[in-house]
Length: 254
Image (spheres, rainbow, N blue to C red):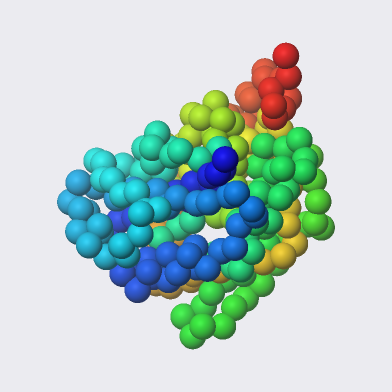
């Protein structure tokens, strides 16, 4: 029986070249025996239907469009269409490193954890890469550790949220990605770590593209009032989950 991992990608006014590079990095993945992937592409806006014309002809690609609500809303709409038991995030301008999906699957198969992350490097416009400077050691990331680090390091997680792979059951239980204009992936990462352990792979799993058009490069992303509001709700949600919900296990404890 084939098992499935779903890669979720929200797209709005994407650069076709970058979107195709994301697909190529996915198509090159070598998965464990009896595993396959699907690419669930969600256009963020009904005016974005032309994105479908850019996508390659591949039966593993599943495209849909919904009302514009930002990447968090698009990802959560896509979550309603996934068929896989695991969900992997991949932004439309990023690329998976070789072996990324296999390492996620292996860690989630080996350990009683709800999610994985991996080392990421910035992919610069000239094609060179730059290291993310705050990686932990490879291994289990204990419940609550991401929030503690985030609060004590100027709201920077020690694991990159754009590399996250999460059990679909857990993502659904947490309500998917937060309905925020940005930082929704950090919100889900902290929520997941509030209720269960995770894993960090020290092998590069993602090339995180840096370019002027990316959402995190826009002035609105660093507006102080907007940042404060996002951080407040991410923090309060994670604290509420850590305080009021039991440790989440897979398979769930009975």
